[in-house]
Length: 104
Image (cartoon, rainbow, N blue to C red):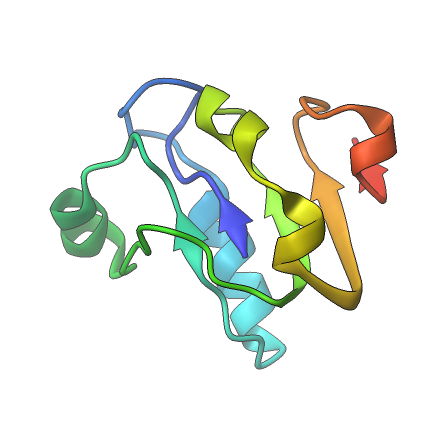
């Protein structure tokens, strides 16, 4: 699961997003990747990048990557979304250290 696709937090701007590259790299390893972003326009993301956004993460996910620090992601219960041996990686350093397995 990748949380966020926009360029920056709490903003619908897709220009210069690097999330597409993360998704592409994961898929090269045959990972099935869901992308969720409450700020992004679903039609625009599909048209520009060929990504179908999901409305709500369903889990369980082997890995959850917080790529964009949207305020809505603070209310997600990541423990219920990740698989038993899953991990949470916080690219933005947005979540508390105790809520993630690794961060930049």
